[in-house]
Image (tube, rainbow, N blue to C red):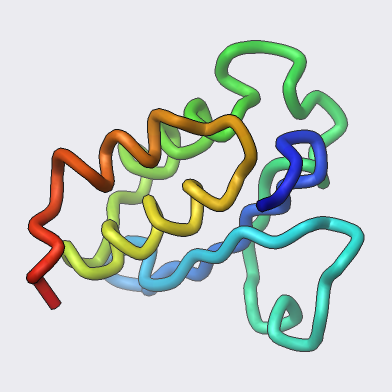
Length: 105
């Protein structure tokens, strides 16, 4: 689990259409070589992270979902799974359990 105040959310988007095709959540203090492959970030790297309801994991997920969207259902499912790694974010776990069939690829 990643503490909410240490959660770094990283993503990459396609050029056209501009949609997210990959997203990961890591601890800002435990970045490794793979984080260098992401061009966009949010979360603990932002000065105002956790200062308002929109500057939370759920707020960032909603922003990413509406501003960019996700390439396909598989990418959306992976993004929700990544957000579920953040300690205390039950909303993402609830989405995982109600939105997706566990037998889906």
